[in-house]
Image 1 (cartoon, rainbow, N blue to C red):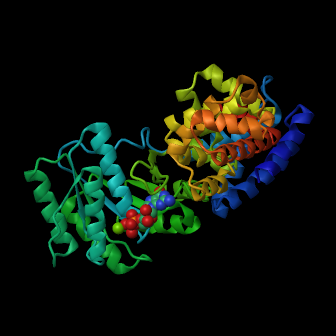
Image 2 (image 1 turned 180 degrees about the vertical axis):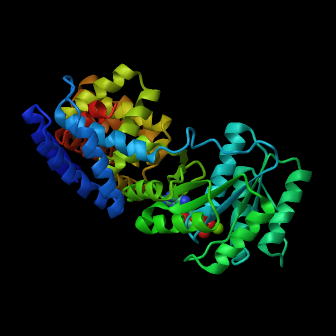
Image 3 (image 1 turned 30 degrees about the horizontal axis):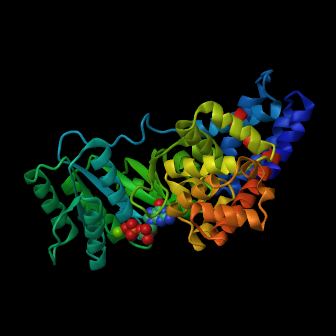
Length: 441
Ligand code: GDP
Ligand code: MG
């Protein structure tokens, strides 16, 4: 998809001026991109119309190509539609104890997200949080929350058998006041589909708790369905924000755009994995990049810039673009990965890297391996690092010995290097890196 897009934009690049036809041709591809990203048809139609109006009146800035200009306009418009509150991550929790109600379908990630947010509130804002499970449908669900609570060091309301959700909510409120908690989170039961009972239960809990925030948790992988769910929950219960989970998966992010356009509710957080730290505040930029099929290269570049000297980052990008990527680069990357939340966090942000990261996980790649790999690279000579092709069997033996490791481990590293170099080359060729860097900032 991104290849098709950059193909069109490359053509535009060659013409030098942004005509109506250019815009139309490009937008036809953008429309396909949107639909493939799971954006609903009416939303895509409106969106294209808005972009067309904006693009046609615009003169082409000299320093960028017309193709980049269209990308930029599309990107900006996506951002515009997606942007909600000024600060999606700021939860309304003044006036303690502040109740937060979590709602959504079964399996959408409510319990996980409850714990993730509690951990965040505790660690980033120093809040005392109490979590309560109102899931009376499945006894295991209550234990699940208790286990997560123990794991992250957040208190959970003791489980009392035989109570209904409203009674539990009342008890949570009392306990939160008596215990001096800043926030109490109510994790409700879900169902596979929206039904009267689910809605009635959530509404009853809402009425006793009077929550400051009602967060709807939806599975980002369910695409258009997620939008219908959001619409219905909002109509019947009223929500203050949406949490999109499983955005670490193959979902293309189109649901975010439809959701925002149709319900008007801000997306507050995105879930990026099963671990307790795998949550981030919603960044429209990243989703915009994702919808356009460019992966989260923008996010990757940003994150890289946070931790690496900006200059170094640019040099690195230039090398990648040219398809040059040696062991020094790999070492730098490995070191960065350790800083950026390890292998998983990093690979999840690169287009097409999903599969590779799964392979790595399958072959037992984890962060302790990062350290050993760095040791292996350290054991190479300057020449070998700059030119990994030199690594013949005898050299490999020496290097492995120097690092106190097996040759088989070095072979894995060499293979990984080759895969990464190939991927970098591909991204450089499609002009994706360049577009991500120039067109998007
Ligand atoms: P609930 O029924 O809505 O409470 O859903 P759970 O919180 O129990 O989550 C269901 C499953 O989804 C669990 O296995 C979670 O680990 C998983 N899950 C939740 N959020 C995410 C996410 O952002 N990414 C991924 N990959 N898995 C998630
Ligand atoms: Mg649950």
